[in-house]
Length: 148
Image 1 (cartoon, rainbow, N blue to C red):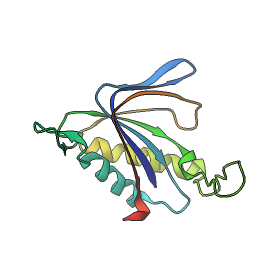
Image 2: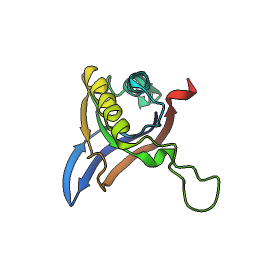
Image 3: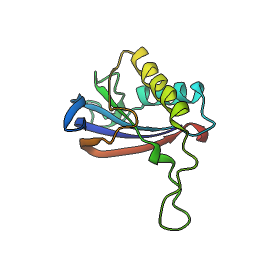
């Protein structure tokens, strides 16, 4: 699995013009799954995201996690994280998991985050979504469960 983590001051996701998920301070996490990903990949990434020290402490150093800041997570499924752009001009998405495999992994990732006590808002799996955020910093990181 692969995630893009963005530290955010505020974020929301809309489907058909209606807000389906919204947070104040916290993390926006774009989540993609590959064919060979398992529940262990989801657990690993949830642990990384929950404990990632990218919020500033009293000294201005990135030394606090979203848990320590009482922040929230806006989690958005994003199969395009597995787009391969090496050949031609149109991305190839063959590495992305099929929806019947990806959706349960995405839901499991979110449930692992909730087990840490985080408030997790989500987009809608498979829907065309409009994601808005104020990227704070900006801070944007990519984490891949296969690159442990």
